[in-house]
Image (cartoon, rainbow, N blue to C red; front, side, top):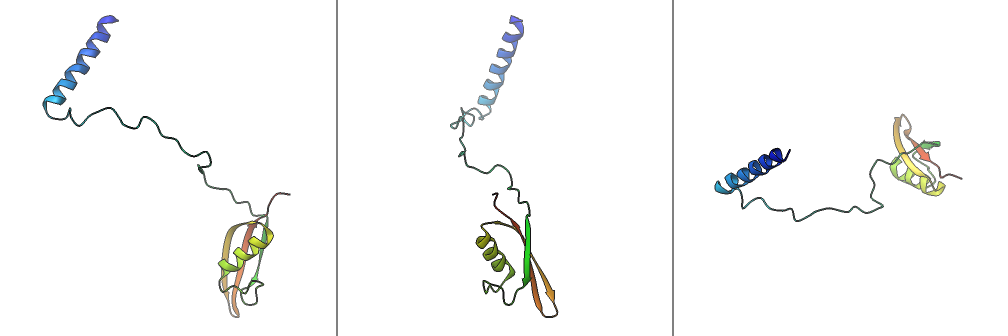
Length: 107
């Protein structure tokens, strides 16, 4: 067992000497950074948005007077205190219909 450890140590020393001889020894050094820390609040996975309610209707005449379905859905989500999951637009013969999937807050 002792001979194996000594042989491994000798081989490692020989490799280092060889690398220093070809000019690579000066490039290799002990890492400056030994560890990193991430903030505790860092997001590590995608948020899950479970649709509890789908609301929508014609874009024209929406309560927020928004010019886009995205803006109308954001207004609707804010007024419900909900997370906006998805926005869909459908062009109709009379304009655009919006559909907003909302994740309502837990009671």
